[in-house]
Every structure is written in structure tokens, then in C-alpha cells.
Image 1 (tube, rainbow, N blue to C red):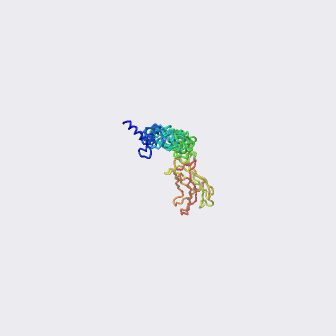
Image 2: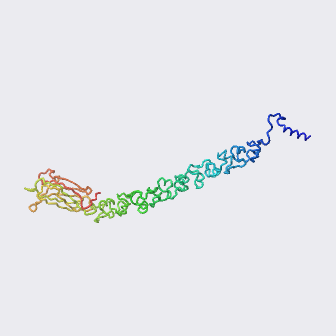
Image 3: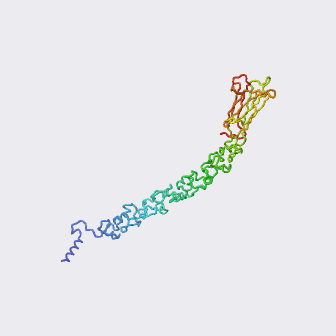
Length: 442
């Protein structure tokens, strides 16, 4: 009985659709896709996959998709061995599961994703013009355009300026590489202009030019000015006395950081212009400092120059008088300093540019009182007649206050203007000044 049943089953299978009442024959076992992965049992056998497991290598992709769509190995979790499973490459990162380095930047996709956090689809993640792989090799950050924050991109440091992209100040001059490019200094030379000062000192401390060894063009190197002289490297005349720093050092031997080297009250430039010694407070050795000395390079003399004289009434019966002039010079407080006499001038009713009266005066006095008199010489026959040259009714003489700082004082007086007709009147015109050398006016 058992033998008959087996034969019956076999006949049924062989007879196909005729016995089943179907229009197509039953599919063969090889054509079946048991695990529904897109591969038939025969194909699974060909690729070595498990016909009962849709994702043989557990990479997140069906075996059929790996073979027919992506061209990956259905039996290798990571076809390109880049450290990322095929499924993650396709479904998450969109990388090429058959290319170990999708963006050709020199880094495996897996390293970019897991180690460096860079973009496996972009060769230059930080857009600094250096590929991620190159940045890893040189030690820069592939996620930061300027790794050392010096103002220069990593690419510029490596390819253009040959500076260290890992050090903001390649030459250790206290100036960042980017700032050096800004100031045109050399980021690989701490003293670009070889003046003895670091570039950073020049820019940040002294405000001098790091590419010009003599920033103020005074003939002295910036470093020498700062370290040896104490002068300003950005000011040709440090002390503002009118003299170039180099001239003070080399020519006049004066102090370039002190406007008045000898403390005499006159700055160095003015002393040189007046022919005085800027290193000697008392040029003429008279015991008076140049700044207090009205004539610091000689002996002071008060000069009263009679520029015009006219006799208004004849002093003598038949002829004009014989006028002469006397000047008395006093301290401002009244003590007599000295006097001088000019003339007489015979029979002179009118004189032009009669010459001068001279009185030595102290070099440290600046204010004087001058009494000017005019006389008619009648000697030896009679006493001299006193001309009236003052507009003051009660005085014949002129009393003049003079200060050296007035420079030249010019005056004209007419004695007839006092209203008295009895006086021997005269008109006098004169200049008062100080002479004897260079006059210092304060």
C-alpha cells in the first residue's frame, strides 16, 4: 500500500498543472526567492549568500540590492574596507561603498566620519584650499580654516608665506603672522628691518615702522634711538627744540631728549641760531645765565641814537647854538648806572643822524630809566643853556622807561608844545636799543 502512495505523489508532481487544474506549471526550487531579498535560490548559491536570510552580511542592505543596485559584496559587511558598513555608506552618509576614499582627500571615509569628523563627501571640509588628508599630515585642523588664529588661512601659511600654521607667531616677535603681512613685515624674521627692535615692539610699543630701520628719517636707527639714546624712533626731533636728533648727537653734542641742554633758559636751537653755546649756560662767562643775560655773548650797552635835532629858537645871538646831549641811565628802582655825552655840535640848528650815546649796563637787568638832556655849550664864556625838549611844562628833560624786550624804542619830542614861550625849545628824535652782541628778548 505504501509503495502505491509514493508513486501517486510522484505522478502528481510530474503531471504539473494538468492534475492541479492550473494554467502554469509549479516554479522549480532553484527559481524560488525564499528570503525575499531579490535573489533566487540559484543566485544566492552563486554569490554564496544565505537563501533564507535577506541581508547575509548584516550591513543593512538586502543581498539583491547589493548585487544588482550597488555592486557591493553581499557577503562582506564593508565592501571597500574603509571602516564604514555598506548600508551606512549608502543610507546615511551617501558615500561610495566601493571607494575607500569617496572625496579623494587622502582620508578613508571611516576615518573622516569616526576620527576627524570631517565631511567624507568634501575633500576640503573647511574650505581653506587644503585637502583634509593634507591637513591631518601637517597637523592642522581640517575643520578650521585658520588653525592657529593668526589671521592667515592654513593654505596661505603653508603654500604662500611658508609660516607655521600651528603657531600664531612663527618668528616669536610678538606680532601675529597675519599682522605681519598687514604691516608688510616678514613673519619669518623677528626683526624685519634689522634695526635692533622686534617687529612686535615696533608696532605695538614704539609705533615705528617694522620695515624701515629709521622710521623718522633722522639718520638714527630705531633700535639705537630706543636702546642707547632714549629718543623717539618716530620723532626726528624728540625734544622739540628745533634740532634733528642726529645733529644733536653728532654735530652739537647736545642732549636730544632735553630742549635746553645747559638749563640756561634758551633752547638749543635758539642758542645755535644766536651763536651761543648750547652746552654752556653762560656763554660769555660774565656770571649771568644766557637766558637771563640780555647780551649773552658780550657786554650789554644801552644805545641812544639821536636821529634828528632841531633848535626852535636860536640859542646864541647871531648863530645857532652848539648843542650837545647827555643821557643818564638808571636802574628801574632809581640807582644810577652810568651816563654818556654826545657833542657839542658847533652852530647846529638842525642835525640829522647825530650819532649815539653809549652806556654800559648790567647784563641781567632788563628795565631801565633814561633821562635825556639837551644843552647849548657856551663854555668857557658863559654857563651852558638848557634846551627844553619835554612837552611837560615843569621839566626840560625827557624821562623814558625802557625795557629790553621792547627791542628798539623810537620817540620824538617837541619842547615848544608845553605852551611856554620863554624856554629855549628844541625838537629831538631818537632810538633806544641794546647792543654789544646778540640781544635776547624774552
